Length: 245
Ligand SMILES: [Zn+2]
Image (tube, rainbow, N blue to C red):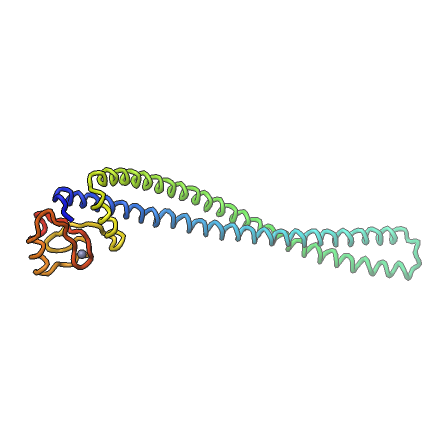
């Protein structure tokens, strides 16, 4: 394929804009801000789980408290009844003595239940402050997550804008180049990742290999309009004064 040297050099502009586009797309796919969002989302889930687990423990304690309240009530009612019977003094002596005995054990039972209740209430209080702390931690992580998501949106917006700008620039360069040459360039780019590159100091700008003397002689002998390719990677080699020919 014969190509005007000016148009060959235009391929370098195309390769430059394609490199920019590749880098921008790569950055879009590997945003550090995205990693922050993932980490914070994990932290948020852990904080939520912790708060939920404490909440469940508090519910369990509330169930214990209600049970203890019921038992204390029952003991209290029984005591009142016994005390009324004792005050009336109308029961037979043997029964009164049994009631007296029961009052003693009910009072001990009541004291035990009240102690137990106190312990459970203290536990509940401690868990409540754990729960408050976990809630505050959850709020904190959630607001960090919202901020991190905003940063991702901003970064994506910025990159999208630059990709759109470079895509427009690419179209302008493509407009200057023969479609057959663009096809050759695109095919090579699919194969090796680089469509065209500068031959600089006898080195292929695509695969970075230094061309041997015979190859350099062949290229130097070719007319300026000849389309040269790297014998190693196939990249279209554009010759300039930097080529070392
Ligand atoms: Zn090469």
